[in-house]
Amino acid sequence: MDNSQKTAFPKILFVASSLFVVFAIIAGVIVTGGPGKQRKIRMDEKRASILVDLASEINKDYKLNSKLPSDLKFLSDTAKFKDPVTAKLPDYSVVDNNKYKICMTFEVSNKEAKAGDYNYDNNSPYSYDARIIRHNAGYCCAVYMKNKNYGKNDYYGNKAFELVD
Image 1 (cartoon, rainbow, N blue to C red):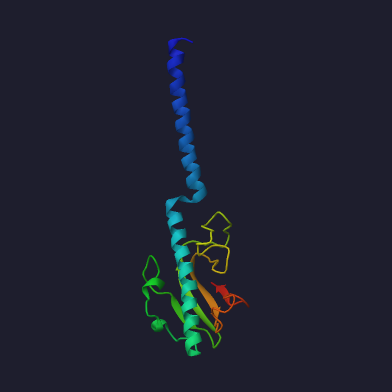
Image 2: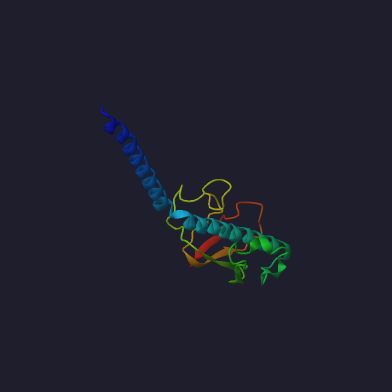
């Protein structure tokens, strides 16, 4: 090898390595949707958790008072139920004597999500357990059945929850 070949090899290796890194970063952004989409997904995970936790509080109130609350004024601490971005409480209404509805606006749809797309673990509100809420992007409502047996058996047993867009 002459001197020009010896000095060209590190340059070629550097260019090839640099291109590999650039393509890896681009592929990562394409696969994950980028940091902006991941932030929206995390906010939607919090919103889904809020829906479930609020339903739990409503059922506790129903168990104590034998009627569904007419509004959310019964909550002693509303801060934990506020949207993480807008700081607004979810919309709540009684549908009939047996059902109530909680609505929030979601940023992205998770209807087509599969394991690995979201934070599917035991500590996530989107894990594969009773806390999962599949939703479209935009304003979505969850309709819950009142549950006087809250805490005694499976919260979502007997189709106690359905999502309506």
